Image 1 (cartoon, one colour):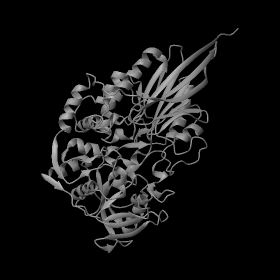
Image 2: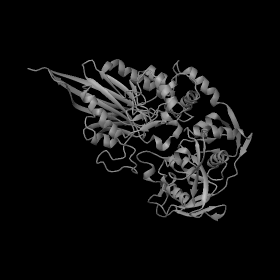
Image 3: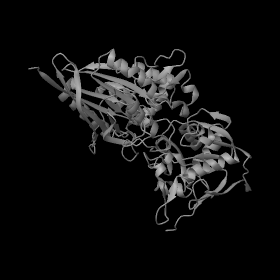
Image 4: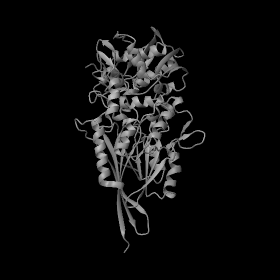
Amino acid sequence: MTATHSATVTIWSTSDLHGFRCTPSQHPLMTNVHRMNELSRMILQSKQSLGRRFFWFDNGDAYQGAPLTDSFMNELKKGEDRRHPTTEWFRQTGCDAFVPGNHEFNYGRDAAQKIAGQSPIPWLSANIVEALTGEPLFGTPYRVWTTEEGVRVALLGLTTAFIPAWERPEHIEGLQFLSAVETAKRWVPLLREKHAADIVIVSYHGGFESNLEDGTPAEPFTGENEGYRLCTEVRGIDVLLTGHQHRLIGDARVDRTLVVQPGSYGTHVGEATLELTKREGSGWTVTSGATRLVSVEAAAVSPSPAWLQPYEEEVTRRLNRPLGQMTGDMRIRDAGEARRKKHPFVQWLNEAQMQAAGVDASLTALMDDNAPGFAPVVTERDIAANYPYPNTLAVLRLTGRQVKDALERSASYFTLDESGALTVSAEFQAPKSQPYNYDMWEGIEYVMDISRPPGCRVTKLTYKDRPLEPEQKLDVVMNHYRAGGGGGYSMFEDAPIVKQIHTEVAEILAEFMCAKPEWHVQLTENWKIIGARKD
């Protein structure tokens, strides 16, 4: 009788940690050290109990998002040569491989390559290549491991190809971002045939634009998130680890491929478990598998590990530095209300952008539903809490028609529920919440009537008390993500760029705050929303 052997392989995936970002009330560094500690404990315990049958991969966007991480990214960008705290955490916790996300390029390719060079683990991305040679930027984009039972496990890294749509051109100069699907079609057969992989895992910093059940579009289709196509068009992928969208996806399969996505900020781990069998004289065969989400339940209080403490002390000193004072109430107690009715904090953001750009029209968004606004004494911590992204500014020369189209896009953020009350439309809530894609303007006057059909909601649009004509030109400052059409603002894509300000917005806000010893914002009621039921 031919002997049959069995084996089990367990894969854990983290993604979009963003420095374990949390709100300031949770931790003074806005890095959830408690969650980081608990996740480390869980991973190290699994490694100890499962040995070489256990793998942990991180799926990108780990190095940006909290003051602790961003501070050291800025140092690397300026030429400093220190190990980044995220790299040290990966080393301490035993990560097996890292797939860079789009935010790893926020500080330029040189900084990203420096981090990769310092890393004790491989950076894998097959579709980020040198434009001149076609070679992957970070070297060989896959790794193959052998378990204790002899199972060969291969991992291929891929990254969303839409980075050029958001990133500053100088940050990605000389790079080409290829289709994830077409790239996988080249590399997956090589892993199967040349490297005799028994299990092929693809870790893709991207997500799904289609419903997993039937493939129908689940969001406005751009072609960016190629996850569904990877499952249905590329044969030979056993497990697809995804991210980027900050979604929670577990217990899922598309066609013959297991899929998982662990959300963001380290709240969950994505787990894939594969069962394999082998007969004497033949190779291993995957017989079953499943994915699930593992919640990371952080202890209420846990001390920072010794290796992290020097990083914390340095960043804490900077974050606690006072910048200026505010009179009047600049706190945001309800982010939704601050989008429905003009808030002085948002006006201050726009005024800072206009001053930096030298124009008299601006748009901005509340980046997060946890944005706290300003207390009477404003510190660098407050700037970081309200503006977590390393955006820069651009001035576009827009026509009145483009301005109206952009306002209509923002107006589509809202809808009316069955009772006629204002609520956020499904498009901006699924597959993930997108509050940062609702803009509020300064320098123009406008009214949005949400009772009207989308596309016909802007009932008033004036500039300096006169109607803004369709062909009239207006210079408007905005962050570079929006200037590139990000968030569904395609009307901006072909607009002339008048000026670019390469200083990061957070630094601009800090400098603006320091320009006066005391601030008082005189609110201008330049816009309003109508058409909803009055409570």
